[in-house]
Image 1 (spheres, rainbow, N blue to C red):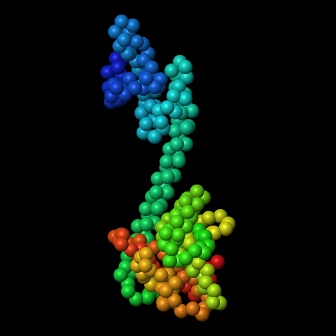
Image 2 (cartoon, rainbow, N blue to C red):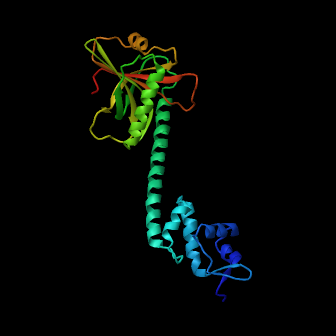
Length: 264
C-alpha cells in the first residue's frame, strides 16, 4: 500500500474537485503531508481525509472556512471535538430558524384556509376566532394616514421580532369605544405568548361580528366604523388584514371584527 496519495487520488476518495483541495491549502486548512521538492507535486496521507471531511461538513453547515482555520493548530492538526461542538451550536440555531419558518408557514396556510370560508361575503356575519396575542402601540395620528399606520406597524413588527415573539400578519388597527370615547392603537399579531409588559395584549377567543372591506388610500376608517357599528355600548373593533389564497395588490382586503366588550 502506498504511504502517500496523489492530490487526484486524495480528492477522488471524497469526490472533491482538485481545485478545492488547492484552495483549502491556500487558506491554511489542509496542507499536503509532503511536497516533492523537484516537481512540487502535492501528496497526502489517508489520515488527512478526516480533515477534508470536516471541511466538507463545515461547508454543509454554513460555517465560514475562515472560522475553521481557528480549529487547526500550527502543526496542521484539527481539534475535531471543539469544531463539532461549535458546529452543533450553529446547526441548532439553524434548526430553530427552520422550525420558526415552518411554524409561520403553517400559520399562514391555516389562516388562509379559515379566511377562505368567508371570502367574498358582502353581508355582515358572525365568526368564532381563537385566542390571539397582539403587541400594540397607541396611535394618535390621523387614521386616514395610511403611511403613518404602516410605519407604526412595521416598527412594531421589528420590535416583536427583537423580543422573539414571532410576529405575523395580520396587523392593523384596534379600536376601543366606551362612554362616547374612542381609543385607537396599531397592533401586530404574534405567535408566541409575550411576557407581561407594556403593549402586550391577549385577545380571548370569542364570536365576533364581522364585515369585509377593501381598504384603499381613499378609505376612511372612521366612516366605516360609524356606518356599520353604531356607538353607545362598550365595544372593541379589530381591523385585521385578511390574507386570502390569492393576493390582490390594488387594495388591502380587511376584515372588521367587533365584539361587545372591552379588550384590555
